[in-house]
Image 1 (cartoon, one colour):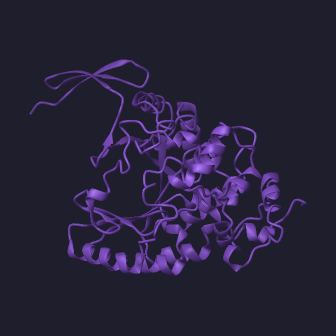
Image 2 (cartoon, rainbow, N blue to C red):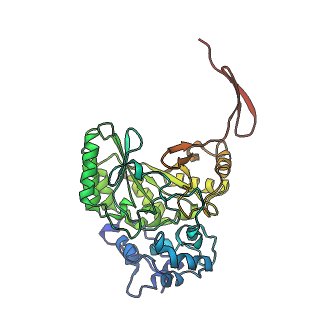
Image 3 (cartoon, rainbow, N blue to C red):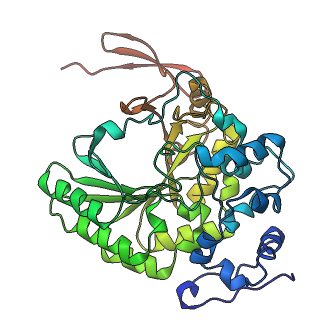
Length: 392
């Protein structure tokens, strides 16, 4: 297939004319009736996700560990990779950060004693189906069980994938009634699954209903779609969001290689629509567990107006040991960010307390000693300084 110049319909007319990469051309050729225009259609991408052993073998040469992982994935968390995201995989490098996140390995079937099916304890704090109320003034509103791509370390692998699709309009209405009846709730995080896999009409029903509740002041959308399927970010979607401004968006980025021209354009469209964006990054062994890799990611995010917000210690979900680093690794990354780059590129490093403890911030020790109101402090370069509290 020759290099293609994209043609856009009205839904994607605001996109730049980005030619398909050689790998995108190669994957598109696997679908004989598909065109470059199909490649830009998020619905086509969803319908044609790579989900089988035969399909992934046409894209990369699997290792034995990966082949066993793909064969057994349906018993834990199904494999699902949009063609767009699959095109970012290095077919020759088993250590490719995109490949590690998206292609199952048989390590997922190993279980460590500390691992849990629901490490964040969301089920015990679920007040009605699909609504988690842990913190005093905010709730997590789970609106679907589907993602475009299933991250192999997913903390909600117990509920996403090819499940029973138990979240729907009837469950939304029960959750909305709970929020209406609890005036202490001022902040609603709409998540899933990934809410942006829903159609615009369903999303508008959810968002408009939440925004109509007088005591709700802050609405966020938690999503990875701008990374794994940037074609979903259309002018129609953003025009709908703008009707209900302000809306914030938390996006899951893990590696600088995810920041492609299409992702840059999608995020610029989001920012131009007045939607502030923050990134939630999971610390993953072999993917981003070094200060240099994290710093590169955060610098790339600032260029596209995404503020690094959290680094999460990888949750101890069942079968995640091959992804999890030591906490000391995360602390070392923070030590090599603070003072070594702009503060805008320094997120908060947190551990979600296993079993439902919520986000616990973890930071390097900068207070060397404290005597009364006299503090000895260590700066980013290891130099000591003394600060004395005022007396009144």
